[in-house]
Image 1 (tube, rainbow, N blue to C red):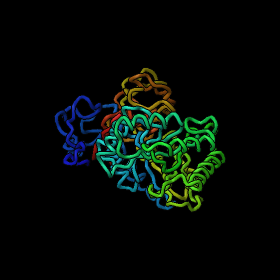
Image 2 (cartoon, one colour):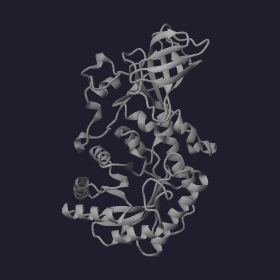
Image 3 (cartoon, rainbow, N blue to C red):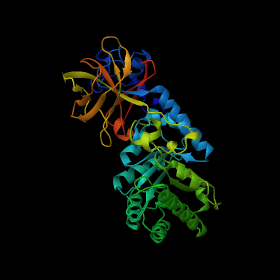
Length: 428
């Protein structure tokens, strides 16, 4: 846990109260650490429904798997923290070999710093003058703090330089030129010639320092292995061209080449293995974030491990438990979890198991399908033979980790036998 003596919050000492849904009412006033130490059972220990549970075993498995994968392929990785916004998970990711943590916006970087993260990669061009003033103060106050962010426009460089000068920044901000993943990609510079113009703009100001190139292939329109590979070769070629042109000051120590979300990191590993020798060592930085929890939808289908099963397999770590509160007909039932509790931006929840309210037995959710969500209800279609009655708990798999985490501020970590061993605090 973070050390309060070093100025970082001690999450175990936060008090349990009404702010945190699903936690036992009789735990009011306990600290999170005290509640975790009681090792209550998720089903019989006073937790109310709906309740989101995170599998202790699956999280540990996933952490170890990506650590091993990165080591095997010579990759550094800075998992995207926006997935969980959970400093406890950041700490474990760092313990399992992460170089640092990726952020998308200034607020996330502030959360990271408040919890002691010493290396941050910001996957965006940072042009907010207030945020840049904060960043300059952080860099000046802590010589061990490493920060890297995108630049993707000459105008962005101008704005960054203006704000950093006004802030009296003593240390330059390290930047990487973002190459767009395709001509209609999300952000980034579209052509190599424009990349060179942005790099020229960086070289012309004392407040920024060019350390590499980067991009994100996950939003590439029509992405497939061939297109992603072609773009990655362009990214590597850009790094080599910049190096040949002497754009990297030897004082930077290493050249950063970064890509890789949660869908194409196998292709990233393949192409990055072919990076030619440059004038400085290369930090091959992967930024996949969804792996820590995986899911039962988007990434179950799209994880690269489906293409490389010999490398291992991630395990879905989330299960949302809700209770049947209405069984109006033989074809329909309703539970008390809805849009406020379950991610639904990509797929509906998936009914997986039922815990019998009479016996405590857990059985497969045969013949039960989630067909829709209201704000506080899940609509279930129940086929012939579906064994379900009011009071039963339905365990659901969820899709898209980034929108699963952000609906819960304190998430029980549960072992396979139902024992709650920890609680994960999120900061969205």
